[in-house]
Each structure stands twice: as structure tokens, then as C-alpha cells.
Length: 154
Length: 165
Image (cartoon, rainbow over all chains, first blue to last red; front, side, top):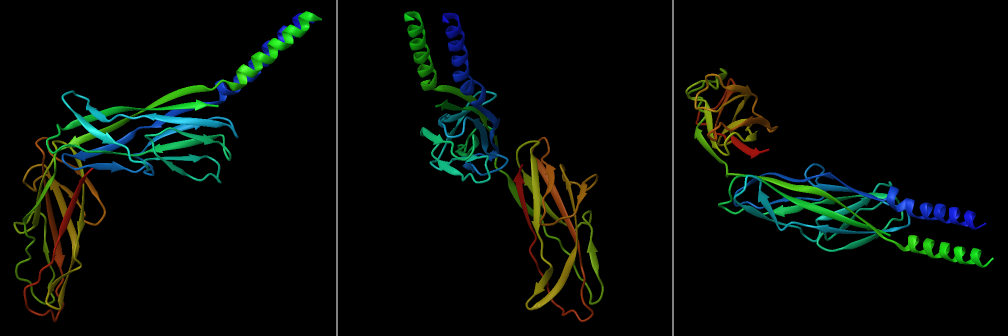
């Protein structure tokens, strides 16, 4: 009897922990690409831009909650060195939308933490826009910065 | 019997702990931009048909001395899209002189020799600046005066719009 219970407890623990580990994921699937920008001319990308907006895919469990939090750069660094360029994110620069046909897009502020309850689909996309402001004397060349999305699955 | 109770209690505690544990994951993407120098577009030469006569169409080829020309400067070797707003008629007061059959050519140097032909239109044409940031665009066309075309000086505006891509 004792041995039997020990085996059962191990199986139960494995069953209880597997869904979060196996089913809950966050994946970066598209970079936020401002493309060519001109010195002295601010340039924005809408979160609804199907090509240039950044995009993450989040998968969890229906009727469960997931908290999302961005770590956003304030500057993009010149890849070849020698400069950086301001980047900002407005309060409407993030949009989450479930994959179910009935899912409605939710616009939110990427600068704050938000928690979603997955009521219509177990997975969703988050699109991210932003704005860069090159100075009039900005050094030409490629600039880059890292955007991190952290999801806490409940 | 006492042993069984203790193990069961431990099982409940383990399951409760597992159910209440939140799990965090992170993923990254990159924000990218390429800074270019500002572009300039200059209407360098007017497309000039000179004298035309009623009922006689006249064409100016891109290689002609009186073709239109735009001079552009921009980021070295950068890709650029050009598009046009083109008149359907040249006008002289209330009189119209039809213009069409547009022709175009681009080159990295200021010569039509070896230039790349295209058809100017509102749709974009993709080209590129030279290694020193130069681009030249020539425009030709055909005017078709009617048999009773009113005499006068006719004008129209050709606009070139350029954008990096």
C-alpha cells in the first residue's frame, strides 16, 4: 500500500505540472522593423502594420490567465558603433488578439503590465508598434535594440 | 494505517503546491532601423515639345535634348521607389492638348546612354542611388494636337515622388 501511494503521488505531480511546461509558450516571431528612416524625421510603425510591426505568439490554456510585461529599449544602438537613437512606445502601441474567429483585438500600453484571461482561445498574438526619432545629425547606418516579452502563466 | 495517512497528506500538499505555481517565460525580438540621409529631388529640365502643329502628334524621347529630367540625391547605394503624377492634358486657358505615351529612363550618372527604361506612372518603379548617392531620371512623352487645336502656349505639371524602401 505504501509503495502504491508513492507511485501515485509521483504520477499526480507529473500530471499537474505538465500543462504549464508543455503548453505554455511565448515566441518572438517578427522583428519591429522601422526600415529606412531619414535623419531629423521621426518615423512610426503601427501595431497593425502587417509587415513592420513586431510580433509575439503566446500559447497557454483556455480559461487561465497570463500576465504579459515588455522590457522595452529607450534607445537603439548603432550596429557599427558610435551612436544611438531614441525609441518610444505610445500607450496604444500594443495589440493582443486571440486566434479564435470570435476574438476581439485588445489595445494596451506596452509600458505597463497587463493580465489577460483566455476566454475564447488558448493562444494569441501580440503586435507591437513604436516610434524612432533620429536627430538631424544622426549618424547614418543600421540601428538595433532588443525587445523582451515576459509572460507569467497562471 | 498511520503510514498511509501521512503519505496521503503529503500528496495533497504537493498537488496544491503544483497547482498554485506560476511559470514565467520570455522571448525576444529586435527593433531595427536604418538611418539614411535626407533625399533631394530637383526638377532639372523641363520637358519641352517646342512648336507643334494642329493634327500632328509630336514625341520627345528620353534621350532628346528637350526631354524632362529630375536630379535626385540620397543615401549612397540605397534603394528608392519613384512614382509620378502625370497630366492627361497640357492646358492653355480653357483649351486642352492631350499628352500621353510617357517614357522614362533612370541612370546613376547624368547621361541617357545605358540608362534603364521604364514607363512613368502613378505606380512605383524601383531603382537605386549610385555609390555616391546620385540618381537621374528622364521623362519623355507624346502630345497629340487636334486638327482644330487652338494656338497658344500649353503647360502641365509632372511631379516625381521618391521614397526609400
